[in-house]
Image (cartoon, rainbow, N blue to C red; front, side, top):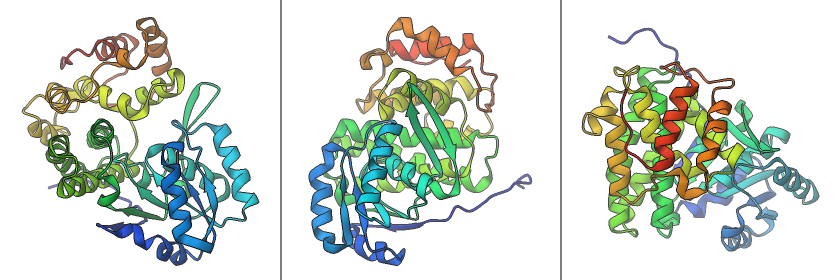
Length: 354
């Protein structure tokens, strides 16, 4: 019998399946909108422009300068374009950087959002906005941040590079692991988290072996949706605090940082949240932190923070930053504990459950 809990269902429309990119215009109209500003990173500029061409008069224009960690200066530039083009909604085409920009715009002007997710970030179904200014990343939660409609078309992920697929998938898995030990976890979100982990655990090795495997890509998108959904329904803890610290304070890459830290944050909390993490631990061979590390290594995931520019001399300052205003966590967050965690993650060592 489950203990008493509170579960708030998150609103949002999910359009899932091969070929659903063709439904963008229909979804914009469904929101009562007629002039969409198409958002992307510079890398996906051609895709954004092609989508704008397909939408015709329904496209107000494009803004293709979305950047990692959602810099406030980029958001302000996009807002100017939004106003100049007389847009009445945004269509975010891409991964976490582009999705974050759309959410940042919506938080400021309540613009309706359609997201076309092309990675496994999972942020498209949350009400969480992380943005960076003056070398510091802060987060905001607000209902109007959550996109109204998300389109998941596996066809758009067939060309996603394997390295990016792996890092993005582990990023999504981090959401699910953290959701299991969140202070406001409940039976519904925990079921979704375990299913999301299962889907990605089976899909990612198949993607590594055969990147164009449409079934594997579909399973990975399904898993990332579940993992993102549970993140949007519960509070964040140690893992996301550390990722925000390293991303905002040291400009570390978002998905890769999540991927590297996941085994270490899971190991840090494994004993303190053994009951909550039991089903995930079983999925990874009885040792969650070590099992996640071995899984990540087996699919060629990044393992060491040092490989992405973080210096050993940065670890003490990062630990100091991480213990300021800490999120609720099953195990006490201490500077020595965080420094040990970051030291092992920096060197790419296998985590030790304590």
